[in-house]
Image (cartoon, rainbow, N blue to C red):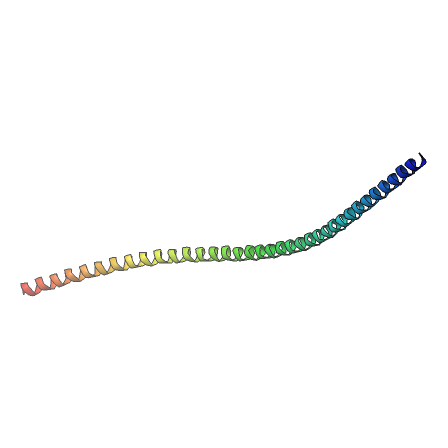
Length: 129
């Protein structure tokens, strides 16, 4: 009986050693997976940091462009108002010139009519003589 118990004890020890080795293999595999995950996590952190910096730079660039565009828009609006004012002034000048031309045309018409009347009068006087 003692031999049978000894065999059982050796089998149990062997089973224990096998289980211990399996567990050690699993622990090593898990440690390896954990190291890979940590490495991936570090890489993701680094990538995130780089992307954040890039996005910050792009945001600053876009903000700068927006600021420049706002300044350009302000200049355009200023020029628009200036040109609008000049155009209104020129329109007023054209209206004034048109009134002057109308007055001059009326004066010319009256002068022509007076001249025609004088010519007729001269013709009548010459005819009567």
